[in-house]
Amino acid sequence: MKELLVFDLDGTLINREQVLSPYTRQVLHALRQRDIHFTIATGRSRPVAEPCYQGFHFHLPQVYKNGAIVWNPDSQRYSHRMHLTGSDVETILSMAVSYPVNLFMFAMDDNHHPCFWFKEHPQLKSQPNKLHEILGKLQSNHSHLQWSDDKLLASEHSVINVLSIGRERAILDLAKDLESTGRWQVHYSDDMYYSGFYWLDVHHKEVSKGQAVAKLKQDFAYDYVIAFGDAHNDHDLFGIADEAYAPANADAYIQQCATAVIGHHDEDGIANFLAERFNLPC
Image (cartoon, rainbow, N blue to C red; front, side):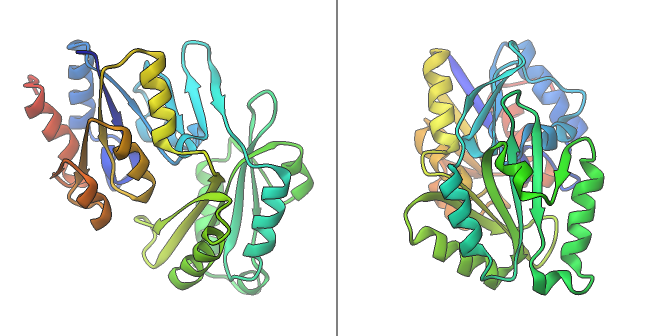
């Protein structure tokens, strides 16, 4: 039986420091030596995800932006890309302006060059606050990306998703408003790295990790998929998997959807499970 293991990153395969632990790296190398196939499916873009596993190469195509884009390492190109329409973007931004949240867009041009567009809400821009600190860290950690507050620049790219960050009430109210239209895929969750803040992520309606992984399963003729994830955006991935495992830190809803709940992501929970499941010499 040809198996494929699929790992979410944040809250699952990587630790609190947002990197692969030495032991997790050891286990992944042991899987590869046993010819057990695996890849990642994350809400991050590839440039933002790569520092998490720096020095480790995933051989199979990788799912980014919750399934909106798939990177093929063999061709060094994106083999799948699904973006929001111009009308989608205009409507999402016009709805979001009523809420005290900061907005981001991840976009790509025809040559797959990424660009981040951002806009601070007037209420939040008037004085320094935690959101400024978060934005500053994002820009400093990913200075290799093109950042702009020029909406026209973003409009010349294909917008993959619109992101928002803010306090819990504002994000949950905005999410409810966006979901009520039935037009988009909307994910939201508390930010595990910044206490008291929530993220919201809006994609094309047909985008999901499950949809992207199902295509990988078909294209590479896998018989069996084992998935690992911790949050709302992993629900569709769990739905197409033959087995699904949630770490102990996962959202309660995802734990209920899982085949079983395993160890905490910051205690090598996934690696420990894999070492035992596949009898790895680690």
